Image (cartoon, rainbow, N blue to C red; front, side, top):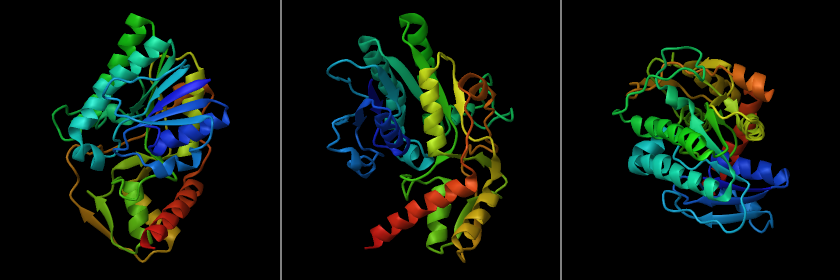
Length: 314
């Protein structure tokens, strides 16, 4: 099998590269390194199953030879990134999706879109099921990401219905693990770095807002099972174990043995109050559910962040 992964040098994309190479795929990784890092894929350089193309997929994509699968994972994914790069985020969600779908259509390949739980916005339904249409502010600062992904889903279904492209859509909930960026900007890496440095841990709002964290190996396993399925409508992949942000901050202090104190700052605009996936569809169709408990996943991630911070200080 020959698989193209856009955004393949990113956090999740690079883990997908590893996973598919172990499954004996030839992987073509395309990334412009806006938020991806060569450090995530350097261990694959020189592997005959791996090819890297530095390219912005918002421009026309050319890949020589046959292609069996196109996995579109290119996009800034944290609020820190898409607030800094709002136009690029909108372009990769629209033009990048169009170009990636065009590649899949021309190669008669399967197409899998990496969508997000952010299509649900600040939800009025809990937990979030795939048939919930969402509650999104299209003109707020987070709208550049939320609406880019909602548009990408609509474009994917249009190509499926009109051009008969064999498509999949995965709605990814909060994911964590090694290769997250130290300055990612999201709660978990922020808390981990602040605790390791014994700095104050910054909680926005009163910390009662919830998230559901899935370890990256579980996510990648679910994505692969979706790729092999015949499901064309969106499927939630995430861990349904819900935790408050304040509880997560306290867990991080305990895990690291840090003397950090928790401080509170105003909640960002349109920050979702609740987030929990309903994974009934994934359980039924894919026979998938997460296996890594949060304590185990956080310990694995902590080692990566500690090593990264130690190396940065050398």
